[in-house]
Image (cartoon, rainbow, N blue to C red; front, side):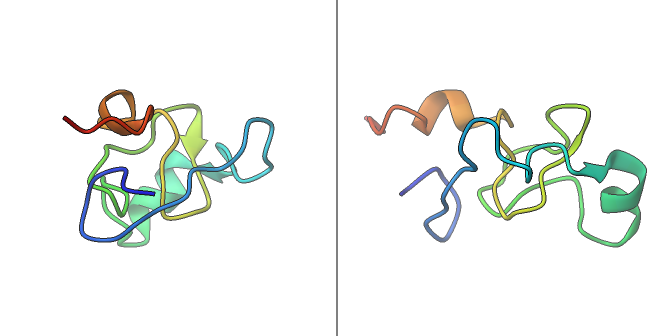
Length: 69
């Protein structure tokens, strides 16, 4: 779905093991950068999500319901 950014992304489902899986110091220290693929800030929780989409990141509130306009 279009959650912002240059490509479609799929957020992790609630309860997914991907959520907050990677410690913040590790994911930001390996060159991943402070933004996910949609341009949302990461980490948005206790750690970074191990996927291209950071659940709860800035932008999630705007596009999470599918209504961009």
